[in-house]
Amino acid sequence: MKHFLLSAAAMIGLLASPFEIQSQVIITDDGSGTGTTTWTNDNTYVLDGFVFVNEGDVLTIEAGTVIKGSTGSGADASALVVARGGQIEANGTADAPIIFTFESDALDGSTPFNVRGQWGGVILLGNAQLNSSPGETQIEGIPDTEPRGRYGGDNDEDSSGTMTYVSIRHGGTDIGAGNEINGLTLGGVGAGTTLDYIEVISNADDGVEFFGGTASIKHVVTAFCGDDSFDYDEGWRGYGQFWCTVQEEGEGDRGGEHDGGTDPEDGLPYAHPVIYNATYMGRGVDAGRRALTLRDNAGGEYHNSIFYNWGKGVDIENLASGEDSYARFENNEIAFAGNIFDGCTGLGLDATAADLFKITMGSGWASSEDSTAAATASAAAFQASFAANGNAVAASGLNYAVEEGSGLLQLIPNSNVPAGANPTMEWFDDVTYAGAFDPSNECPWLVGWSMLWERGFFACPTTGVAAAGEATALNIYPNPSNGNFSIQFETSVNNAAISIFDLSGKSIYENQLSMVSGELLNVNMLGTSPGLYVITISHGDRQQRHKLIVE
Image (cartoon, rainbow, N blue to C red):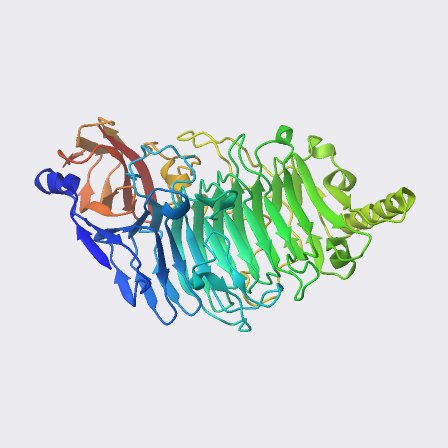
């Protein structure tokens, strides 16, 4: 059932604001799910509890649409769940992303960036293969009493739809003791699903977690999550490229927690994803958090990636039974090639492979001598592999500085960061650099749509997109203002396009103009809601973005 409500705030704004007024649509689910429908960007949608896209239905979400989860935990938790056989078509753009957040988030910069656990998250369930017995199970975060929470099957090409330019914020609420919801959960999702330009910000649990399946994902960032950044279990066998994580100081666990099987641990197929061009930025060497852990028969490959600012390196499980991740390494199902380790283990550039790779010896060994001998041999094998496959301890040029509005977070590496061989599989983009961001580009692919960009955690060079708040070819004054301000160009421009966006990505002002040097453009936005806005000015091949604060 769907309820339509025009809020009192919107009614007030109807009289005073030049914005297009949005109605609030409250979405509940009595078992019938969303149906096949379209959520449009002239509404804000509020999820009242768990809302499902049922089998056979398609939920289409327009670019620029905002979806909010009602705040609560346990029985009051909210989430959007695409059930097996259902599909989502959520296609945002760099200028108009689709935003998932919690009900009280005004999207004006007033919500602290690190608020977590306010609602659930987004869950996609599919029919692809798992290694758990009997081949399907209930996804974590959904009560066992809900049959639409089942996932897994035998169709590795299954499609759960498309998600592009989607930002998921402030989720991960508890539904029970120790049972949180991930920002983006992928349970048995198949290779027919398209996932590209995805952001998870400040989730209380993991950022993105794969439970089996064959889904692949490009251009994904997780930031400030309370647990692991990327997690996979139950035999995930997809691809990943251009992955980035940034941890908050004092929060978060591993960059990647990689498990193979749960019930049973030696179930087939083994997890064996292939990941290229990751940038994993930890919360400091003193925190002692590990970049990666592989265990429970998990395989996996990391190529041409950067691991920066981690307290520890990579942990590989080695059990006496031989059913472990070290066995996957021996079988060429674990690989590290062309990677950079910078600022890890507290040893800086003096770190060695022995410092970076830890072999965790489990129980079951006949004697401590056997365990010690096996640990020595396996560590030596990893060290030899590290050197032979082009991995290096080297400076990356990254900078960990998590401070809103500072622009100091440096995500793009130095141009001289080496990379190994390019991927040969057709799905991957053919690039020759290490890390998630092209060092030849002036700005990361997060510009325009990411909350990291909105809040000014990183800056862009003035030769491309202007750093947040920085006036390079023009002046904006006063700033902050009451909504009435002027823009003065320092040089003449011909046929420049100016747009002003709110933080949901919606355009509230557009103009095409030509200005001579020193000429003033007066903009009257009196009555506009206080908050943070982004002014975008394009002229020629140059585009600049500047912050505007309305008080």
